[in-house]
Length: 433
Image (cartoon, rainbow, N blue to C red; front, top):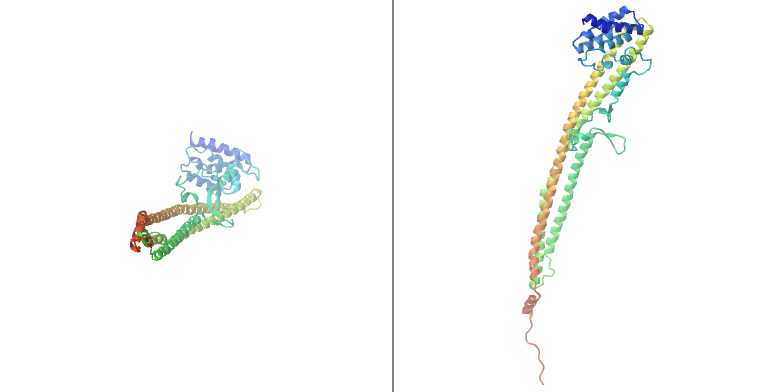
């Protein structure tokens, strides 16, 4: 089929029917506009076709209803191997009036005030996402299900995207702020553990001092024999045990308390502040971009409303200048639409950057937390090792005492005492007369 036959069958005849339906312009006017949009059927570049449609709508003197009807009839049977229009109600016809006309089926009109299927579809698309505190999230159950970045790991990068209400419910706390608070809390717990070990050291030092003092006591110093030897060894073991506990306290200080105190010093909080300021700056940028989007959205709505008013004036022919005004209004509406698209693009770029930094930084904080836990685990295990060593030394101090106690012999002690302190072996006898 040649180009003329295609044009007549798919463009001219439908255009005439639309003209008769709308009763806005004579057939020759419709034919002229059909020729103007013929490039939409024969163009090989889809982008050129979209631009041609926009240009035709903006500069045509035909009624907007007729122009939109023609464009819809022509674009609708576009070859199937071409990509679909990228949301034509937004890219080509930003005004709500035109969106409704575009969404109408061929030969079917929408009464004033009704909502077209296209409008309902746009509304549904908008409702699949929600923006909370300037961050856009998908609504539950809408769109493809998101997969965790690190499944089965309970990673920070998967569970701290939303803001959290504080206990009073008055303000929101950012998810990243929760992670920072966890780091600060971990630092505080580490400090308190060091304080606990310090108190343990003080107890050990006091205990060693008292043991050493007690070992010098003269109580029961005059005990003799095998029992006296065991008692002397027991007092000596107290002195040795005091030395063991003193060494234990010194090792606790150098191998447990000090590492807990010095692990991530003052620079750690400075590093956390850098993370905080970096992410907070990105959130401020995101809030600024979102404000720009809302401002551009409002400007577009105002331009659409102004265009609709001028379109109604054109239809009832209130002013001779209305056609010129409506051209300006269309250009402003299109510009407002372009501004909105630009603002949305900048917002998405900023949110994407915030997302990437959130993933990177949260995983870094996760790594820091793992290091903190492993560090504390290592030094608490050192505490238990030292404690076992102390018990072993104490046991070794007790063993000689235990051995001497086993050798205590009351008969031997009596023998030794008698030999040293006897007063005479001759026993008394009866007196003679």
